[in-house]
Image 1 (cartoon, rainbow, N blue to C red):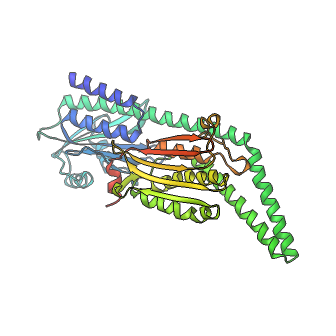
Image 2: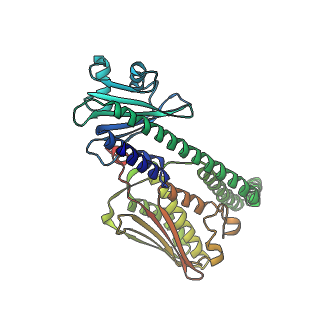
Image 3: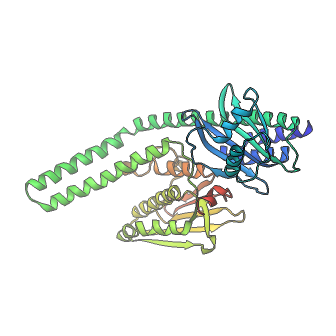
Length: 410
């Protein structure tokens, strides 16, 4: 009983932390595996819309990290099918090798990648809604799962179902609040959209007039206006979509230095045209780091673009991109400039949606999207700035040891 109380307390403390649901499940499964003295524990998350398993999380013996499999199953999972045939009133199944048919046993061995001697399966249900299934595979001491183990895993299934349900409700409320805020901001900033549309109309008129008079200089002028405002409109729409939707990072082993090089090459010509120097200080010893490369590329591009704009206002300047690893093995990306800087009254609002210091040329979403991406990585972004001297933006990303990253790169 004391073991149950101790583990339950740890689970509730874990649920109170500001962590992603995946991180909770990783640590939760390791706690359950330890409490049951099992070789392996697994959670399969149930998707009510598709009526199938959408995600599964697994903690194996001897592993400190969780193996994740995000490939959706078509139809009913074989493990769940076996559970429904061997459970008592669909509450819990305590299955041994002797009970299983040879074909069932073989399929389970293949799915779990180990020889199954005994198996505990219990549904995770909250307020009569199916959340998923919790599995425990094989006792480490080669014995069968006991009645005490059945009680333990039933309690753990109820706890995890409650926590997952709360996580989902929190995400839903957060999304609703974000969309509500976004809608209000769009209405407040309708003049910005109107300016873009007016510019598109103006560009179209100049192109048409130049075409009729066969004046290529006017055609080129109008086409340039169309391109610039089309890009602004595209960026605005993409930023709105990106900001409004909750998105889990698609982690991959990534060379952050290559991302920084790609960004610098993209904006190099624009920088030269405005007498701005790009400096790179990339630490080659960083190696591969687990992050979402597309999202982080967008963050760095946003920061570097803003830095160039700040230098443009002064007529020249310098933008630097630096990468390093700090004492806690966290990745640091620093984008600094010698531009106009940001006033103290604006500094507290630069990450707000639709707040912009660029007047009609800014969408006010770039930094809001950047902060959202960094938050989704469980990272942090800070800024230091002085008017007339420039700004320094620092992104800090924690080391991700999840095997999800490593599996995708096999």
